[in-house]
Image (tube, rainbow, N blue to C red; front, side, top):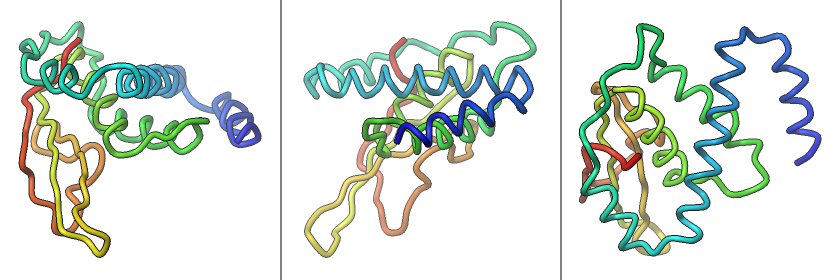
Length: 149
């Protein structure tokens, strides 16, 4: 795990400042999402998703694009010392994009699997799936229009 993080920081030197910032921000958002799932009750998290404010207007013309968020979340999530599954990734990317002024759709879905019911979370932004992919056979049972700040 540590060698993976060390290798990532070594490779970061060759990236442009915008990409480096995206990786650091992804680490921050993923950590925050994992802490919320660990310490908040599920009812509170759902209530926060339901009562999310409208997206902020873009801060400037350099607002981050969904492809960059998808890349950074995926790159960092694989290297963290904690579990960053589909729900953590969707929460992190959703909060980040929502705060940057993008309209998002946070989806929770289920399907019947070999070992029973399986759950999955994915995030779409501007009609494009950012994290989680829709997955094969998952039916969305709940969609939220944003995430709380």
